[in-house]
Structure formats: C-alpha cells, structure tokens
Amino acid sequence: MLQFEYGGPSMSLLVSKTPDRYNGKRHIKRSEVNPVLPRWQFVISLHLSGKTAQEISELSGYSTTTIYAILSHPDSIALRQQILKGTAQEFEALFEEVVSVIRGGLKSDDERIRLESAEKWLKAHGKYQPNQVKQEINLSAEDVVIQILNQNQEESEDGI
Image (cartoon, rainbow, N blue to C red; front, top):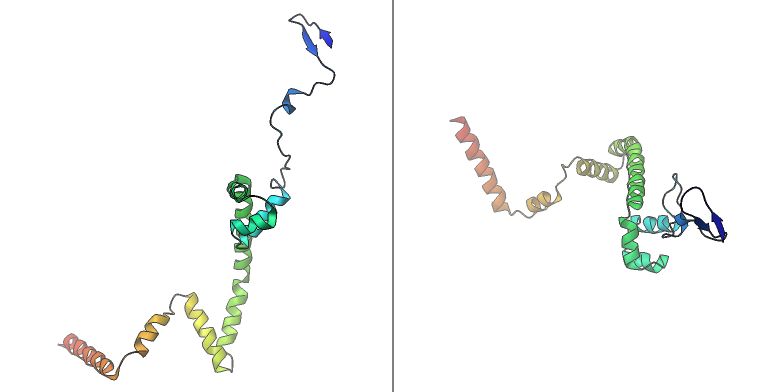
C-alpha cells in the first residue's frame, strides 16, 4: 500500500484497486451512431414483422418480460420510429408509380382489369362501399317500384 501526503489527510492507494467509476453497475457500451444492440435490433425486427412476444421469446432466447422491456426502451422506440418513418417515405415514393399502374389498368383492353383498377381507385378515395351495393342487389321488385314512386313523389313536391 502506498501512502501519499499532499497537505491534507493521508490517502492510501492500492496498486490493483479498480477505479471507482467501474465499481458501480456495469453498463453496456453503445455507440452514438447505433445505440441499439444487435440482439435488440433482432427483437425489434421480429416485432415489426408482426411476431408476438411469445414467438420473439422463442426465437431470441429472451424472456417475454425482457422482450417487453426491450420494446419499451427509449432507444428501441426511437429505432422503431426511424424504421417506420423510412418505410412511410418509401411508400410515398411509390405513390406515383401506383397511380400510373392504376391509370394504365383503367385504359386496359381487358374488362376485368379495368374493373379491378376502378375498384382500387374507388377504395383509395373512400368512394367504394361494397355493403351499399349488396343491399341494392338484395332489393325485390316491389322495393324498386316503391323507391321509384318515392323519388317521383319527392320530385313532384319540389316542383309545386
């Protein structure tokens, strides 16, 4: 043991003593560029692919509580948001191509392709309502006649 005196109380220093900053809880080193561990990235990728916590647990070797802890960690949340933002940007980049394909389908010679393209376009714009079409198909002849009479009556009342 070495003894030092520097004008204050004497201090002893063991040559093999570990510095105090390493005596605390050991923390995992993470780089500033990639703050999420590779095994955590694996867990996040499984989560984003739609796997349940139990399936991720079986594939990764982590317990389900650890899976939930990893997924709720701020670094994991930030990585997930970054991945989803990139996916959204990639989707937006394909938008023009999708529109041109639908436009080409609407101009196709095949009637089936034209109908499918029209359906996709109507769905994308919120104008496709298959339930309304089914209700109209299930109408009897009497219901159709009643609707026509009601429409005529409304038109005649508006004209008075």
